[in-house]
Every structure is written in C-alpha cells, then in structure tokens.
Length: 328
Image (cartoon, rainbow, N blue to C red; front, side, top):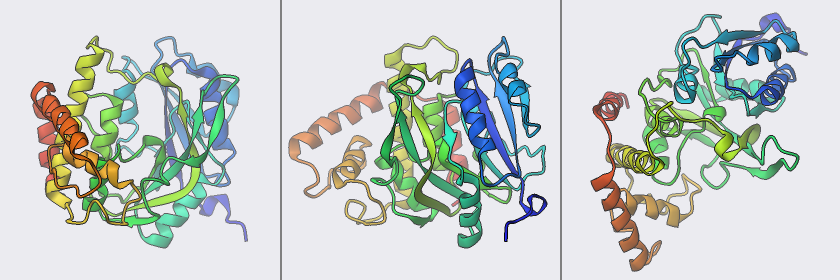
C-alpha cells in the first residue's frame, strides 16, 4: 500500500547555485520527479544579481525556497554551508544537490530504505557521470563512479578513511544523511571545494553504507564548475597546497586505520596499483609487493617528497585532523 505523504519523514535538500539557470531548472525538476514527495529544498544563490530567483519562481512549487547569499560566499563556502547541522524545517533526512547535478526518481526513497534496513545514518550513493554537461553532446556514463572503488555494504569509519589513499572518497552529491548522524559534515575551514570532499571523508565518524546502484548524476563540466574561494592564488600554488593537504589526510588516515593487507584486501574494489601509488606518494611505505615496479616507486617517492617540501597548509587543517582523530 502506498505510504501517505503525511506519514513520510521530511527530507531537506540543499542546492547551492551560481549563474546556471538552465541547469538549476533541470536540477529542481529532478526533485519534483521523486517518488518520495515529502521534501523541501532551499536554494542558496551566490549570484549577486540573484538570477536564480526567476528559476525558482517559474517552477511554482511551494516546496522550493529561494535564498540569496548576501554577501557572496563563493563556491566552496556556499557548498560547505549546505552541510550545516541547521535544521530549520525539522527534517529527518538531508542531502545536497548542486545546481548542475541531478537525482534520479528513487534517490530519496531508496536511501531512506537503506538507512532503515541497515541501521545507518549516512549513505554514500553511487552516481552516473554526465559528460559534456550543458552541451548538445551531453551523455551519461554506462556505469557509476563507485564500482571500481568500493564494495556494496557498510564500512566502519577507520576503514572508510583508507579510501583516501586511492581516491577522493565521498562525493558531495552522493551523500545522504539522517538527523541522528553523529558526523559533522560541514568542514568549516576555508579551502577549495575539492579539498572539502577529502576532508569530509576524513570527518566520517560512524558507519557509512556504500550503495552501488547509481541513483544520482554528477555533471563533469570542467572549467565551467566554479569551485574557487574567490582568491587569486596561482594554479600551481593551489595544486601543490591541495596535494600537501591530501598527503597529510592520507598519512593520518593510515595511522588510525591501516591494515596489513591493504594492497590485497577485497574490502575495497580499487586496483592494487592505485592503492600502492597512494602509499608511496603519501610517503607511508615502499613495501607494496608486486603492485609497483622500482622505477614507479622512485618516481612517486620523488613526487611525494616534492609535495612535502613545497606544498603548504595552515594550522586549520592540523586542528581539523586533531579534532577528528579522537572521534573514532
């Protein structure tokens, strides 16, 4: 029997947007098309001209609320604020759907099912990739972004953090969490949106369920994705600092949760070479068995030492790591 809307837990969707009217309209329509109808969406528009207001008004759905960012937050702060613990609608579940991304019709319903069936408060949902998003050549990938990374099921937080050695970890658009989640998913540190995802992976302090059936779409749109802090730091400096921050997160994740069979364990789906690459490049270990040749190890070791020497991080990252080390 179909569940009445009044019996359905409320889901609060947060949508950061910036000057992408067509994408935002499509994004919001994917919420309207959900098989789970008891949701509310707050749109946070970072465009000083408030271009997103007309899109929200044109949709004509009372569940979608428009919010203008005054002053402007820029992409990374706007996205991070969407992971706040604030609960103005007294919702039971939450997710973030950026303006250029989509959720498929059963996204909400199936994530709530998993929370109930597996007694978890955080689900990490697989996403399809939309290549050339926003163009006439847009197309979807045949598989999701997680099949070659994770196994279906529940991960303890220390094990989940080890995914940082081979990959970025969580994707913002794949996260779905409950009001009883212990983890604070808002990073609260000024950094790029990319680094936020690495840090958000490190912040997981409770069991997390990885769901491999793709029910969301991540748009790969390259330089059209605004992910800066509004500063003028050079590309090279940003990359070196990003990689140094990642290296610190990787080394600390290893200290807290390493396993002797990391290269071979079937807990992850990562290729052994990717796992070994992370161990060497993060300056953790050269003992990678047959996964890497001597030349590959030396090259990765040199890159890791360069990152350690030239890359810079500030005290906020160290404080973040220290704060979360005692939570698992």
